[in-house]
Image (cartoon, rainbow, N blue to C red; front, side, top):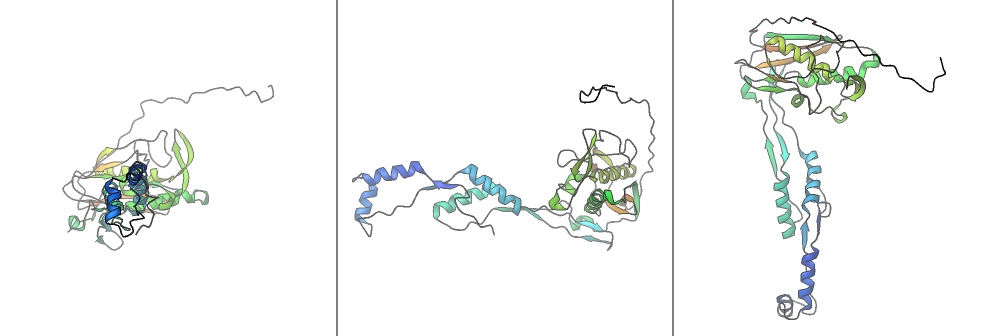
Length: 317
């Protein structure tokens, strides 16, 4: 239940209609005056409702604010490796802004004090029935990257653990594409993420969700060695200390994503662990169809440019 006022929803007096009513009220021959003279209980006084209307832009702005509170993302069915079973999906919901706006218009015209908002069900993409008889006994591919266990890096390590926990048990159905950003969601404080160093524009800066790229890079590498199709992947602007060049993957919500497609005829499940200084991503399935080797060769290097800048504030020499 959302409680608000008509004013907050953008309702206001229609001044043009009110002006026409007042003009009619001053005209002794108008239908309004004749009705009041013949039918009203008190012919000497006229009780006129104010003509109200919704300002669409204000109403939509209020509904969008409500939508942020009402909307809930669906949760896909996933595999719980701790319990060894499938966890059922949970449908989401979304406020239909313009359908609700139509209902508000009707309620304002009728004088209603409550409106049932138009909310649609958002189904999960992976449901329990899809995972009937799922097999996760074989490691189709895996990769490990180190993380710091020092006190100064605890916020980054927290983000790595949180991102991994959101991926653990996620299922890639046959022929379907998996989105890292869709699975992990927005990296914001309200969802438990913390500020930690990130690479931006080739330099290290503090950013929300720092460490999430290591989660994506480790998953990308495991997917590569499992034979999954890398639909979308973007490298960092500089090498990362925790992974070999060519295997990293940067992610920025919602613009830069890591997308993987399952080319096999059976589901593939992500199993992610972060412990003892190692982040490990596994792709579990009923079999390991390929053995994949990565060969790398450095064909050249470009030295960093040297730039000399005079500082007028330093003493000469």
